[in-house]
Length: 181
Image 1 (cartoon, rainbow, N blue to C red):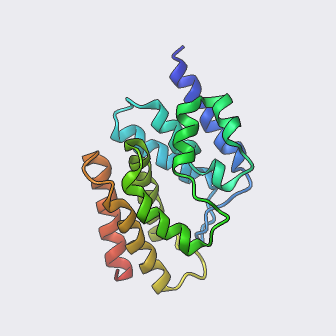
Image 2 (tube, rainbow, N blue to C red):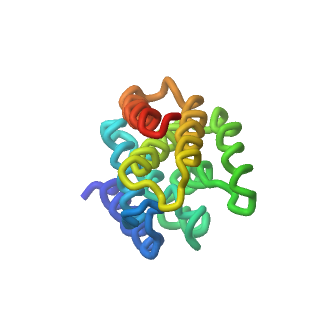
């Protein structure tokens, strides 16, 4: 059996267990794992399955930020490449939200190719979720601000993968029209 398939399956299982009690912010309150698998699927499709480390990073990208998972645990389970990628896209939750958002815009240009691809897929998934199931209590202004911010983060990720960028552009254009951004 291909070791990559085993590792991908283990990453999906680990992510699902780590996020099992979490739901998306949207009105549908979908299981959070739906977001993780959507991001991973986008990355797999965009790279024609050629980068299992990136796909595992997609599955695990929120574990350090939103669960009790540790970097050391990710290294032990999935190796240093996967752990480093997850750490690279992890926000410092000790900072205020507005600072974290600003830092994503400022620091994304210096991220690795994989981290940038993951950012595109993550923002695409989030925009699609906003359109299908906007978070309860979010004003039109907050929705518009998110759409603009997502585009600002992705701007420095351009030129790496036409398929992924086209998916983001489609989601962005639809969200922009819907929310007037």
